[in-house]
Length: 274
Image 1 (cartoon, rainbow, N blue to C red):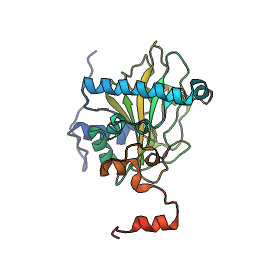
Image 2: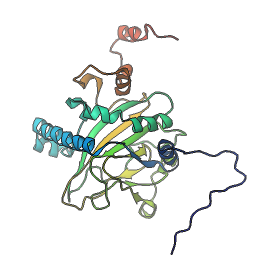
Image 3: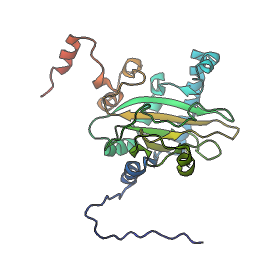
Image 4: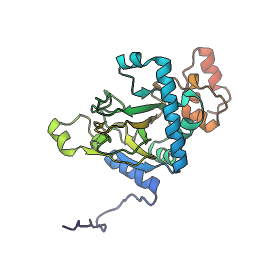
């Protein structure tokens, strides 16, 4: 049976959103459904560089902190604070033009990078992100505008077979987690090509799927939020390269570090206009 096309004409409508670009379309879907897929705009060679650097940092990370030790605390398949491990690759990823343009259209005012972690969905193993959650956990409220956005960069293709992320559409608009029957009926799996960002309002419920293939599925998870939330790891204190642009410093939270004393607080206000 041929799929019918929904009508686009309307009456009695005084206000309507206009989504005449990729960025505007993604923002509209996030506002209404809580998620969208966004093309990063990277070339195949750039994607290969990201993939190779992900694996290099991952090997060093496990060597530094120990495979057994990481496994014992359920951290083996996570690489914390990728951009603090040197190099420009993952800082550039956080500053991706398409991503930043979408964030600016969704979050009112300033926002910072709360966290950037490499995440690996291992083949045929239980995944530590495989339970339903919000990226602002333990919160049960509804916000008229996004307070935080999750940007999951697909290093590999996200498919049903390798555990593509499940989402509950529009659950960012409800305070409580829905019933099991509702979850089973309404959950959908978001497939996306390598090089895409899967963007989520951080209040939308989501869960990683089970990877039924023989290869790991890799991604880089970002959370961007208004500067009222504490970073998962203090990024400014862990950056090895201090030659950062003003844009990068603001995004990484240099302008929002907690003053260590009254003197520091007063000094931070000097030169500002009020």
